[in-house]
Image (tube, rainbow, N blue to C red; front, side, top):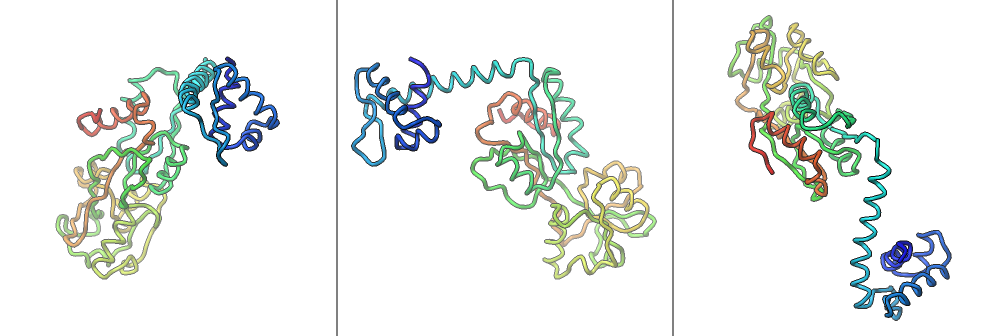
Length: 302
């Protein structure tokens, strides 16, 4: 039995009519009817109940449809395997800047160690909401994000990671004592920040709002798109910044930056690895998840 007859049978039942199936398959309605007759003749029974407005399978048709789906899936898999011979796999990783700046190099080293060179890796760095949307649209294979809002889409598989600790930082040249510091002290300085859509800024805005303040209380503002520039500006004493501690651990340890804790502030945001639910068992996805978990010294989720 040729697979075109099985495919026509499946499309007829998916669409619920011969005419819609004909449009879907780009053939005439009579050709669709003829193929179904050939299929019913081959199996010696009626496969489609034609009495209803929307066509449905008969009991024998249900069994044929189940096997047809398996056969058509297998044929598609074979075609993809043959077409991909000699082609490198592409793996697209989306991430927020903090994860990319601090953790991605080590993750990538582990991930490449688990896979052959026959793989192309592409990186996309964006804000959390954009990455989640592109993951839903299947433009990305996997994402790792720092974020404030909960991820609620049922089609996304979530792997929680350790929360990201945020701190206010300043240059020692500003003379602000390290440790617990009153919020009002920082208002005498410029705020050095990334754009309004980044999650660190979102968390800062929430903290300020809760205390009856806003970014307007600062002396002024300097906006940087690049994390490295933001940190450099802060080290030079141009202002203060609210950033992930993981970005500035070394600078704090060396005394290049002072770390400040503001009692009224919530100092953590979520960090999450996510992929599409349907791809949780994909070998490349599993290898990437394992690499991320190993980087954070976490037990494998598998």
